[in-house]
Image (tube, rainbow, N blue to C red; front, side, top):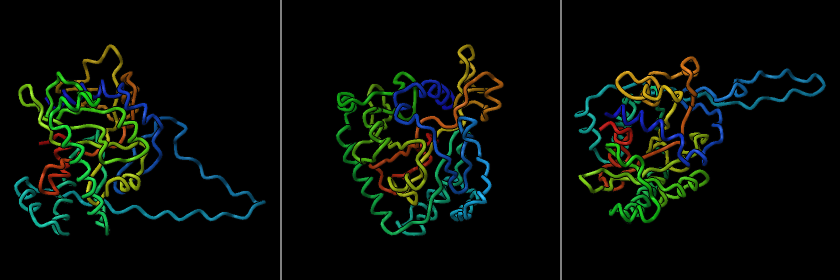
Length: 298
């Protein structure tokens, strides 16, 4: 069912107004330990280094720091992770949560930021975001109030673990600035005919680099995610975007431009911007910033 939800969502998501706020082509920004998806146009290929003009003095190329080493994948079972992440909110707990988050396999259609070292002021900044998220969410415990205030349910008739109530005005605002009290989406669980508020989602432009994401919410605390390598099916093959052997969409096995071109689809290196979920009513930091939950894995 989760694969079908992702596939159906992928066919609809790219048509939403949210894309207008992020239609600028992403900059080449390869974060530590990650490989950027292929650029969307041939013009974005790696440039050829020009030969120096003999009539002009050589200009020294700025030194670029080497990327951080990729953290090895750590295998732990769920019981071990939950037990260890219940420690006090100190460096040990942070290290345990780092291992928990990095061991998750997000698949070929999702990329995530990796956790950085905790810097002075990071925790206080993240706590302020959680406080803002809680203030924003408390107003919408009744989902009907959210609807009145302009939030719209995404795919209301499709069964989902988390329903996104999206405010497109806030989505456009998030393309240029960050306001913890203006989340792009409210997250609800459905219980019968009612919705229970569980968290919020923030967004950032898809061309934002990791330092810019860190300015919004420290990457030592939160992990942002983005949906990548999507092949939109041609009109007459949309039925191949769901099911166990889906070929297109975010649940499909096509992950490269060449495969997508050969199948007659349209390849999108990344759809939408960066996203991060916050569950401000949880008590433990690892639950407030749960990566597994934001990936709809639990």
